Image (cartoon, rainbow, N blue to C red; front, side, top):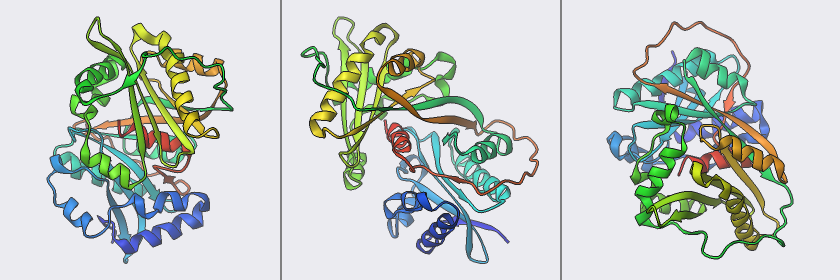
Length: 346
């Protein structure tokens, strides 16, 4: 009989061996110690009420004490009303196990108050996309595309002094307003944030520091309107790979190239050999403009990800069993995926 339980330390090695057998290249990135909350912290975190949870939680499906699959999820935003499913590992022909794991966390957390669930999946994992869409009835929300900057040159880059400045705690409300307005109106409900999401979070900063994450945030403000028209975050885990996320209002979209140049110059000062990645969100109103700018410069498209959403209160349709090859949907398997992990922290 299959049971679903919180992950145990002994399960990590077994899941790693499962991945090594199926796809050896990604096991270390998916199953490294830093990707899990260990005893006794996992016990403490599991008993916290939903509104106090802040770490990833993992579950395994087991039969005869052997793990058949793993799923993990984490709160996506300060309100904890939306959670992100960020990792799924299944064995061969395991659609049924995958459905059980997904339905388990949706019902468990939905019953505790979570309103919606989101997942971002690399288009190179069509079986995982099919499982979420066709079996568990997540809906298409949008796409995120990852671009890599090839051999950027900084010699001729000129930045207007004072154009950008570091984000401060007092900017949180204005950043929330910018972020909300940047999303197409009909898509805002599924990714809406709160002003609290843009405030400095000492606990999150501590966790990031322990994991070696470094983030710098900059703004482009409009003092005349007392508003912020642009926001950029620069993130790295190793000072070699840098991920840049830029949000701009429609009225200030012409500053996109300035933001790119500013980020590239700052990164190159830290590491002349750095690799730079930028994300473009199709649900942002200037997403097409960003794509046009990046494609006209020395960027190459290196990743496409589907954003899928499920609202807990939507009716669940009948399930028709399907068989498929092994499914491994990781949260972190490439520099492009690292950017997605970073975007989830914003």
